[in-house]
Length: 426
Image (cartoon, rainbow, N blue to C red):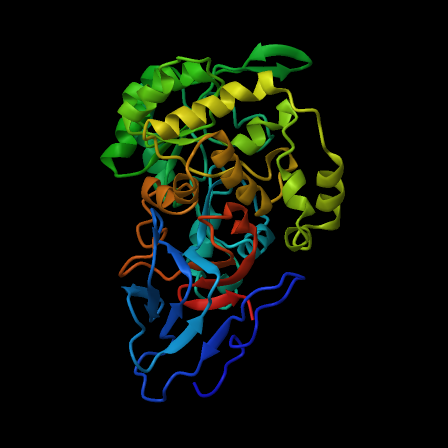
């Protein structure tokens, strides 16, 4: 590649003044197609901030180096932060593959669908690095969830398999693996739902059946996510040591639940964006005012989100935020995944908001960023991504600004690479 390439010029201005982002020519003697080094950016490697240049070759990270090796293309980006491509750890895209295309524009290179059409993730993974696949985020999914007859997941009118007793667990897990599921989701939900206009508890699995499912999945090295309906459900399931607890709850001061989560080793996916909506915390208001973010929303999203401001009920929100903040301080690893497009949460933008909400709750910037990179990669065993480390897939996100000082700059997407190929940006 000779001279200045198409990615060599300044990044799109979007009305914000910044340092030029330029690419220097690579010598003709370079032996590695797609070999480049990102220089000048602060690096978040998935766990912590580091200084150095990131060398990529053949779609993989070679390493974080002090200086670029000779003969490679240099992407010089002062005043920016480079981090792993974001992983949205809780979505439901249904069959709307266009959601994956939109997600990529927000820096999301991988999404984890926690209940959807079983065959779709495997189909899309087969196309992941083909021309159509490069235009969308990669998709991993659980397919059908494990729930009781009439339980959560059955209310959507979609025929799904159910189970009732522990002896059914082995066959149920085998069937999910045969469908191509990359994790098992189990419903343990004792909450009250509106059934026919009257509050009523939905049927849920017994704790014995949940235990049998966890054991069957663990024997097959399948990650386990448990959907819980409240604090008591979380307390009941933690002794079974699931990999992920999906959805948080509100706790009072002094509640031992954060310590119990830490002792269990479970990851917490609190889905704050959806949990705080009833509290009037319209998290997207500040984000939607950012012109860069607003231009990536649909007209309907801009109108709805801009007008949907509510009064913040702190009595409603503080217990939910407390669980996340105290869990983070106790060492619980968090997973950012807002449960979009549930309650019409916008795909992509809601994950950026979820990262900010984790910080608002008390997580450090590093913990909040890890919640959308290394933590979901580890929890769901997506071990080829989620970190900037030797051998990892070069799914990368470049944002304008130093995230150490300005975490909200996560919304200022400047470039996205998928397996070392630039898919967003000039």
